[in-house]
Length: 427
Image (cartoon, rainbow, N blue to C red; front, side, top):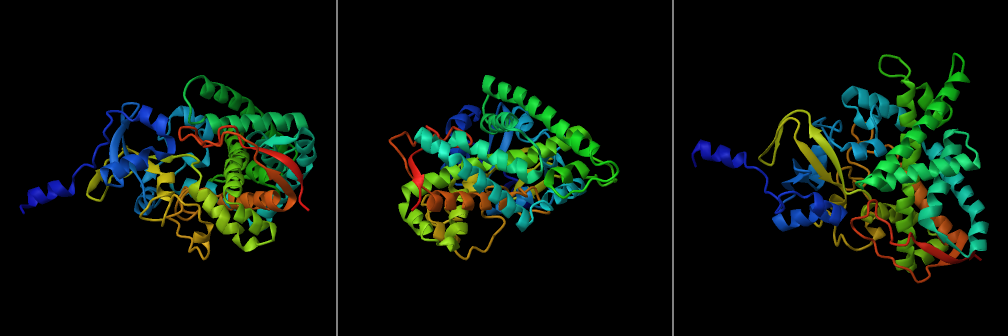
C-alpha cells in the first residue's frame, strides 16, 4: 500500500451520527444518546453537532484515560453558560488546568479525610432521624423533596457554616434548583441562575464573616474555614467571590448525592433481598451496593472538554480547541467493560480492583492528578448511611405511584419523586 494511502487511512475522521444536529435527540434521549449512536455506528468515538457546533463524542475506559489523563483537555469554555453557571462558575477548581488545578484540588482532597467524611455521614443520619416523626405524622414522605433539606443541613453543620432553619430551607432549595435545572433550556434554567446569584451573595457573606472573625490567623479546622483561608500558588488569599464559589462547590455536591440515594431506595424496593440482607447487619456488602448504585444511576450523561494540545488517538486527529464529550453513563454501562451491564448486581464489586478508568460516575483517573471529583468517598458514605437508615431504622413501603425514570430528565428521578408510606421504626 502506498505511504500516502496509508497516511490517509491513519488520519481517517470518526464516523458521523445520522442527525445533522443532535441537540433535540440529546434532549430527548438524555443519558442514553451517545451510547445508542455508538452502538449503531459500531464505534466508541463519533462526530456530530450540538447547537450547530461540531463535537466529537467518545466512551469507554480507553477514552476515559485519553480524556482525563495527560492534561490534553481544558474544561474552560467547554460547557454552555447555562450549565457552567449552575454547576461550576468562573474561577472554580473545575475551570483550572495544570499546576493551578492541582494546587486548588489539594485543598479539597485535604477536606475528604476518613474521619471528616464519617462526621458528615453522622450529621446526615441525625438529620434523617429528626425528620422521621414529621414524616410519620404526614403519613408519607416524598424523598426528592426531603433529601435536599437533610443533606444541606448536614453539610452546613459539617462545614461549619451557621444557618437558621429559614436560611437552611432557602439555600437547600436554591442548590437543588441548580442541580435539576442545569440540563434544561429556557425559563427554568434562567430562574435557577437568578436564584444562584442569591446563593453566591450568601456565600460571600459567609466567607467575609469567617475572614473578619479570624483576625491575622484563620484556622482551617472546618471545611468552610479551610476554603476561606486557602491561598493560591503565589500565597494570596482567594478573591472573596472565588472563595464563595468554592464554598458552593463544597455544599452543592452533597445535596446532589440525594439523587443517588433516590435510586438506592428504588433498588431496595425492586430487589428486596438486599433490603433483607442489610436489615440483618450484612455491612460488608454496603460498599458494593453503593458502587452499583453509582454505576447504574443515570446522573449527568457526559462531561465536556476542549483540546488543549493537538493529539492523535485511534488514527483520529484531535485539533486544538476541538470540542469533545465523554460519555460517563455509557462508560459505566459499556457491554465491553461490564458483564450484563443492564442488570443490578452489587456482587460484581466484591473484591473490586478500583480501576480508575472503568467506573467513572464522578470522573476518571487519580483524584489528585485529574478532574475526578474529590468528593467520591463522600458520595459512597452517604449512600451507605442512607441504606442503613432505610433498612435498619425505618420500615416503609412504596404506595402505588409512577416509578418511570424518563431518560430526558437530568439528573434522573422517578416520575413522582419516590413516595414512601407506612413509615414506622424498625423492630
